Image 1 (cartoon, rainbow, N blue to C red):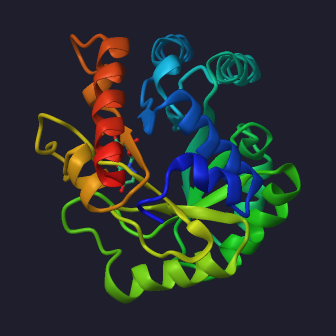
Image 2 (cartoon, protein in one colour; image 1 turned 90 degrees about the horizontal axis):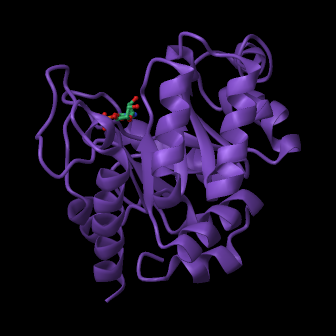
Length: 257
Ligand code: UP6
């Protein structure tokens, strides 16, 4: 699969949302997701509008927005329509199936109503996937499993990572993983990789950065997730997004070659 084009994979993927994602990546020529970890509604909307033309996925953490409201969601959805990207709420659910159903579908954020994609840890076992699927599958949503993390000393390794792969293969609501590489050829499960940067090696709290070449060309991941490298202090987010978009796309073309 890793030598197949996004367009060819879009045509055959078993999940409609994954088909939509792969097709928009091919059409827009981008495998960049921006991690929009900003503190206010105005900042999030400005960032989404600036990077929108360059991304396939906008990754959010809505619980860090101090003035979150339903209007933010409506405006984000309008930007997603206008620029053509999907919204991924990086909620990292980790509780029992019954609780995550409530956290995903209800509460202040009503994530399932607007996020095309969300993700979870499988530490509670497969019930977490079933709980999330009960809410999200009827709405056409999809799930990623955190098979690995980008941080120093992370514990998602070996048998735990393998269990993620088994559960993903067995659950049609799952379209892929957060992790550093392609994990399986089954069901063409997609990998999205955070911890991508062209300059810094990491941050003071354990984050580690690798290049688009390592992630896309060598490891066979599908999407790079880039945060502070794009909107950090003194940066021009549109210009940086274009830079990462070009680096990610060149890395993909090298993989195909
Ligand atoms: N993220 C990671 N590593 C993981 C999983 N998720 O960094 O293993 C998320 C963070 C953040 C983004 O929650 O939103 O990806 C990375 O941001 P950065 O590029 O600014 O470090």
